[in-house]
Length: 451
Image (cartoon, rainbow, N blue to C red; front, side, top):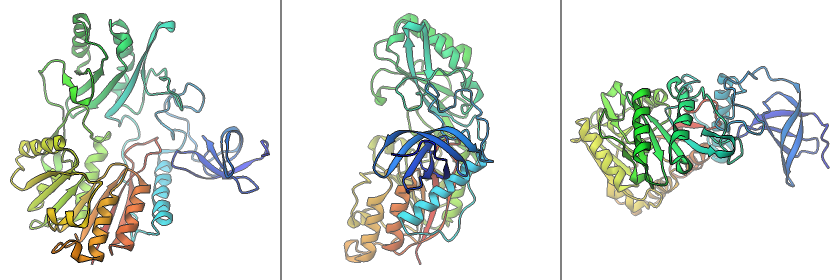
């Protein structure tokens, strides 16, 4: 039986932004809301043989990095919004925690230590989020509509009136959106509104489970005119998304340093933080050090976020993605920017690769790798196998430099271990990208080089 009155010393934060402490008997305790350096008492909610999960009941020694949350809906109590997990920690300290997470993953999972720790990429801590998916719930018993993120550890929608991590224009739309949905005939069948902002256009995607009446469509048009938004409708899956009215500017963001404009649909994957994305693209290409006569492969190329800027610097860029539809969109974006001459795109399953597959795409001087959370294990292993046994990929030469952009430090570490210990690369540098302030999400970038 554990002692509920025991004061625990919080040592660190885990990947879910929970404080980590040890009891006198060595048992690990994960504590919601506790920060490193604090002394706390806790109430245990879940017990296992080697660990416990708990919440604070008393704070005896407060961290100097504890701050007042910037959002009235942030908290650890029932009903609090679950969109953010770290608003109680100073923004600068959040970045230090994420850097520690990255370094610990590389050290303990991969046995890899970067030769250089990169300066974190960071920007504004509030009003940064240009993409969001809001749940919608008509609560008939209370005569209201809720539009927002889910409550902490709950399927219920939080009662949000504002959201400071959204641009002020969007935060101010939360209450008008509640009123709009409440006035619609289909209010019981509207489960979701998705936000996507471009440089000039704010798009809202309404998921509707039944055809909308003429009155509901008119209500959407009136809302769009008053609030300067563009409505898209989604009657079924993502492939059914279409504009309510085919007029007005195209949704797009720009990478002005490279003279690139990226048109996209509101349900496409694009980074939530456009300002940080611009810095990330600049940093990645700077670390890649592409020369004008070189060939580059962009693995997991998406819509061309890195491919098209690379095409302004290299003689040839090959973008590879897992979806034929996405590849077609990438080609359209290349043509839109006048970069079709030195870009090529291919579709294939990037989670099933062999050394022989590498020869299909040819040798390249440099690689940009930007996988989803699952990482790029098949690609890393194919490189390692080809290096260990060149007969598996006749004539293929491994790239001399790889820049790996990651949204999961654990899979980055796993792949780094393969690249360093088997494929003969050095980890020249690594650092964090604070793409999602106030959340526990760790985005990072690493550079691998082979002599």
